[in-house]
Amino acid sequence: MAEQPLLRLQGLVKKFGEFTALNNVDLDIKEGEFFTIVGPSGSGKSTLIRLLVGMDDVSEGQILLRGERIDQTPANLRPTCMVFQSLALFPHMSVGQNIEFPLKIRNENASQRRKRALELLDLLRLPRNYYDKRISQCSGGERQRVALARALAFDPEILFFDEPLSALDYRLRKTLEKELKDLHARTGKTFVYITHSLEEAMVMSDRIAIMKEGKFEQVAKADEIYAQPISRFVAEFMGEVNLFEFKVKDNGTYESDAITIDRNINIPGAKGFKTGILMVRPEYMHFIKGKEKYNFTLSGKLHGEYALGSRIQYEFETVAGNITVEKLREDRLSANLGDLIELGFNLDITHFIGETK
Image 1 (spheres, rainbow, N blue to C red):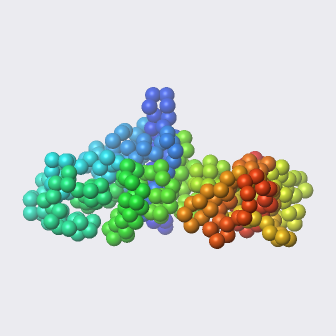
Image 2 (tube, rainbow, N blue to C red; image 1 turned 135 degrees about the horizontal axis):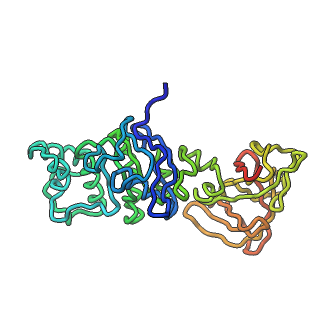
Image 3 (cartoon, one colour; image 1 turned 180 degrees about the horizontal axis):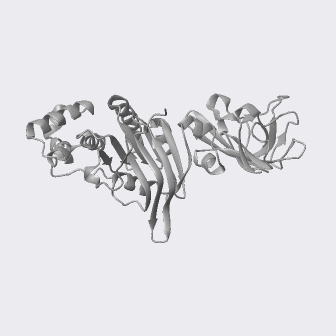
């Protein structure tokens, strides 16, 4: 018998007048999972999390926690908590008072509130003497930790996050990404995280859901979504990518205006399709040297060269459009802008995306 998910969405719909923001969304989230929802602006991810925490009403469908409906339960009675982008800390209160606030409104006695607050300061690796510190005296990173401590105060079953790191500088954001992942491992809690940052999603998540126009386009582990996107949209959304269109002929061979294809290869998954796309990440493209052989080849005019720390990114103008190649600095291309360069890649590092049958 399949394990019951902690959180289940069934046929979830949210309408605003004639506009459908969420369209028949189904999803299962396991207990203890770090689940991240990513999508462009307007895809429905913020609407979804507002339904999950009870800030908006569901138009159709159900939200179930451990098999019991909660979509009609008021937000303050749900065993969940939200960490907002703005953090929503009380500036006139101390750190300890902020952490204790959810317990105070639940009528916990003062000694129990203080004990729990000190435990959470330990968990979030803040000094215990911060209990009496004013929020206005805390740094951005410390405020993030206080907001997390407050969210954990009454021991919720699920923590929801609405882009909590987006307003931070790059260095602090990278630090807190690691701390959030570590906190998730230490607490064993279920985290449901909303972000527009693919980097955040890839670093922290057990699984990722890509949203498009009010639906999930793909739900899978981070590595699978990166290496095996199910559509052109997901492939392009998940970072730098090269896409090569081709046709499947009746005799089983392939034809492309963009690339030269080795006649002896068989592209896995292409059978039954009339057209498709080969996806190749920039790091798997090669500069052809001498008589090197590749399954797929094309020529490109060097258009740009960009230093990215330990890597160099190259842009080429080709009949397939602009193509990106990334190499380590020690493999730097010796060429001038405008030079024609032969490029190649092999079948084993490609991913096929079927388009028309």
